[in-house]
Image 1: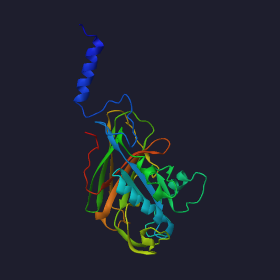
Image 2 (image 1 turned 60 degrees about the horizontal axis):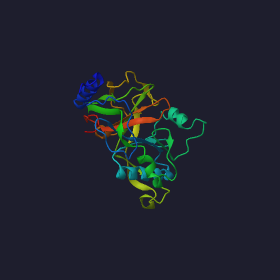
Image 3 (image 1 turned 90 degrees about the horizontal axis):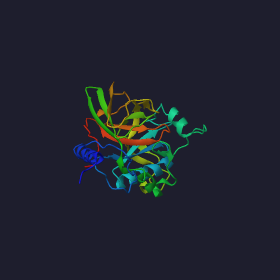
Image 4 (image 1 turned 30 degrees about the vertical axis):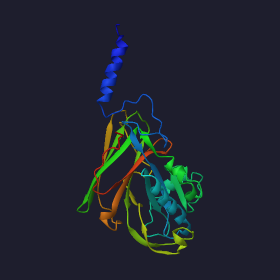
Length: 276
């Protein structure tokens, strides 16, 4: 039987697809948390932005919820944004506060957001699944970072991989610090109800935004393309210990909702999280 030209074209496409690590996306995969990994697609993480303070006793409810998320998934990225009369106060918070509270309300802590714009339903410790449901095994946008932190300087490359065409994306890159020790007020029953908690270890603390805190425009976001953004800067003076630096990078769409996020330790060389 003679085969039609379309049949041979199908075989050619199948051959090249099987020999490539890049997925040519015709149908966007199901990105829900319950969908098994599909070869060639990328891991999807949830971003948790926790607005907090050492003085904020009720904020320990959200801190406990964040800890619980990390016990149940490896696809979470957390950022603690300290505010107010606090040794780790982030002075550039206003644009972000205005974004999540567009009506002009005051930032009365505790406040938390999932993927930047989604309110984490109160009480957060009983709504862990809400955060987990925003993760997944199959997305078409990947992030990988590599950095060198030495001799008082930071050199960071943020690599972005696209398996479909995207438009109107913005990149946000944070510099965080871990293992900051300071007493923490606690008005909750969590953490054994101790108040204050002496020598509490504060992690994922936002120390600097290497981009506009609402994001820098990214171009070249088309299927099959990898884009690299470089950041070179001296270690900020508010860093207590350069050994405890880490980074978070994430991409938001035109609605400011995070599409994917990733964290990286200093001096780590990451690869894209592609499903085998």
